[in-house]
Structures are given as C-alpha cells and as structure tokens.
Amino acid sequence: MLEARDLSIGYGRRTIGTGLNLTVAPGDVLCLLGPNGCGKTTLFRTLLGLLPPLSGEVLLSGNPITAQRRAEVARQISYVPQAHAPPFPFEALEVVLMGRTARLGAFGQPSRADRDRAFLAMEQLGIGHLAEADYSRLSGGQRQLVLIARALAQEAPLMVMDEPTASLDFGNEAHVLARISGLARAAAHGGHGVVLSTHNPDHAFQLGARVLLMKSGQRMACGPCDEVLTTEALSAVYGIDVSVETTSSGRKVCLPAVPSDLTGT
Ligand SMILES: Nc1ncnc2c1ncn2[C@@H]1O[C@H](COP(=O)(O)OP(=O)(O)OP(=O)(O)O)[C@@H](O)[C@H]1O
Image (cartoon, rainbow, N blue to C red):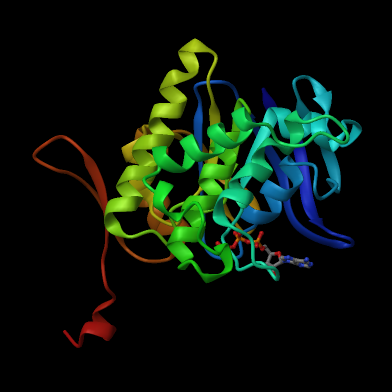
C-alpha cells in the first residue's frame, strides 16, 4: 500500500503543492486530474521517492519510501513516465526487459524466463511485432506502449502512470484503459493498485476510479468519480463551462463548452 501524509512537494525552495493526502491499496485506481502545471508529475516523483518531500511523508508498505533501497521500491511500484526518445538506440524488447532488473541479483543476467515475460507483456499490448525494433525510432504512441509493457513485466503490485494514454490513438487508448481496469480487478487475487494522471476526465468514469482533483498544487476534491467530477468542480478547476452528461448506455461523459468569443456566435 502507498500512502502520502500531509505532503508538501516541490523543488528546493520552490513549493509546488501542499496538504496532499492519498492512499492506494491493491484494487484501487486513483486518477489525478488537474490543469497543466498543477503538480501531478511532481507529486508522482515524490510518491516514487525520486524527489524528497518538502514536508510530510510517503509510506510504502508502512515504511518511509526514502528509507528503502531502489530495488526494494522497484519490486513494489512500477512507473510509466511520459514517453521520450532515449539518447541511445535500444531494441524495444531490451527496454521492456529493464522492467525485470529489480528481480535480478547484483550481477544477475536476465534469464530465458525473464525474456519470455517481457515478450508476453509486449504481446498483451499488441506490440509483440515491435520486439526487435529500434526504440528510438518508434512513434510516440508506440514508445508509450513499450513503457507500459516494461511496467507490466516488472510485476510490481502498484503502478504509477504519468499520462499513460497521452500519445495513443483512439483504439490503443481504449485498449490501455481496459488493461488498467483489468489489472485493478485482478487485485482480488493479489493484483495491482494503480495511480494515473490524465487530462481527460472521461477516463476516470471509464475506469470507475477514485479521483484526486488538483489545482495549483492543492487538493480541490477527492473521492469516487461520480461524486467528485461534477459540472461545478470541473468548471472551477479548468476555468471553462463543462457539462457532465449520461449517455443512453448509462456512461457519464464530460463535454466542454467552447467559449462563444471563439466560435463567433
Ligand atoms: N525540476 C524542476 N525545478 C523547478 N520547477 C519545476 C521542475 N519541474 C517542474 N517544475 C515546475 O513545477 C510545476 C508543476 O509541474 P508538473 O510537471 O508537476 O505539472 P503537471 O501537473 O504534471 O503538468 P502537465 O499536466 O502539464 O504535465 C510547474 O510550474 C513546473 O514549471
């Protein structure tokens, strides 16, 4: 279980957010929503122990994350960062295989079983055919899928995903969201807890997620998506009129109103 208690986050003397509390247990999907620059990535980096909290603490399995060795943390949490091109050319399968590193000994080499697990993760995301491709020459969306496969191959019970669907096409976005949902449902058998950020509130409805709605580094609301994602809350956070509607199939969707001064009406 991952827990943040009264967390202040930031860089050196620059405070980005304060008063942040959250818990993520197996089976939970927690969705971070908030405008550009509100502090989601900074919060993730703090939750992962990559950035020290300015105050408060992050507990992983009940112990401060900053007191745990990186390999110990990596066995418990996998991280899907925003995709970027690496400076060196790696085969895509090698990138996915890096997810197995925390499970190897100090000088251990990946085994046949590790390679099979890495390839299986790629196949589960429909990118098995990219195993031998040069990662640095993949499209942004393909790289994103490789990074998600790397996290799956890591087999950690908690996953932190920074805008995992950001550069995915319509089909892959639905595919990845279904996979995230499946990972959380499998938690009944000791599976995953997931924290993800997204810019699309509809994703929270699709995942039936709990939502932490942020603005300027502060918590605006936290709770089940149906309670938090209201017309009022979304309009207040994003500064535009938003309506939340229910489709004929019973699914909730968020519809932004385009300001009339831009439409000329
Ligand atoms: N290394 C850094 N040093 C100082 N300030 C930083 C650093 N990285 C980010 N920031 C600042 O922290 C603030 C929050 O950035 P962050 O990347 O956490 O936001 P975000 O919510 O993830 O944004 P987005 O949705 O656009 O990805 C921004 O004002 C940003 O300029």
